[in-house]
Length: 286
Image 1 (tube, rainbow, N blue to C red):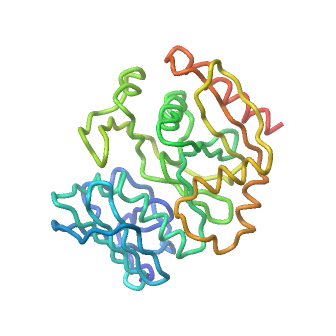
Image 2: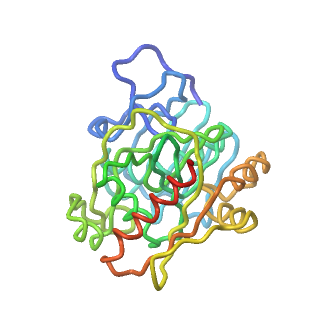
């Protein structure tokens, strides 16, 4: 991957990556450290060959998209090419399509990645992990509406236990957007309909303090997870299904406190579950 280029006005990026070729999507990004690796983003119209799996090596990567497209990455040049059968807007490129790119770059640069969101409370970062439709983005949006800083929506990149800020948006499902009264309809982006909530800036990121696993249940409640449970759940939510370069890092992350947070699917219980979440993380700081 190419080193950072020369001086540039307001270098921007996300996930610890300095991004070029992002044009109209600049408002979704954060100030980039000049020492971050630089990626040049491009898109093209085409029909890439069908693949039954992703291909990731130490030099390049070819990633399948659910829409039938492909992402090609070259480590030495920092070139990232999105190939799809329709034009790809720059805002789509940054979210949601940048997330798998960040996971591969994280693998190359010895960072950890998880399919997770994250937020900041009392000077610490907490990750929110769960299977699809477990309510992660809804919970993060509810936190954002309370003035809580959201670090990421659906991909968490960690460097030595500290997260990088993701693009400054949360993409909600229509029902969540309508209940919360926020978001702008994007139509179908990727594999589903999305309503986009714009987030505020991230002034500073803080070390990861623990994990929250939202689940559906009969009532609002939380229970702690044992170390073996944490390892199993974290392994299942890693950003890339490749053998970890240093398995001890996963063990270190699994040593952090973790809770399963359950709530009914009824919208009336969202506020109570958000209250409980904040009580949990704040009590852990004392």
